[in-house]
Image 1 (cartoon, rainbow, N blue to C red):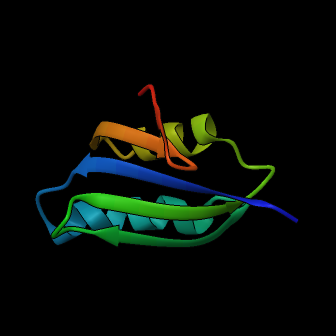
Image 2: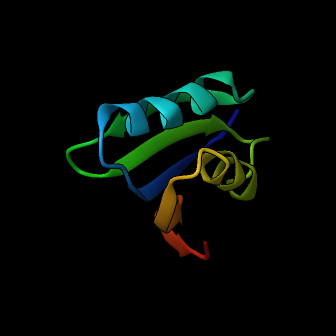
Length: 79
């Protein structure tokens, strides 16, 4: 089974911000692993093949955090 690797640059100003992003990723079906870093302002996410970029992007946006850029499998994507 293949998987996707997504990377998002997200404006997060505190531990609560990164925690909010972690909580939505933890609840999202199809997420295999994730690493949300307040220091680098990034979220690295590995998902099952069935979970698409747009779904992950929308879940992160619903936290109210600003997504500055996104990549899917190393390719720059629209936000």
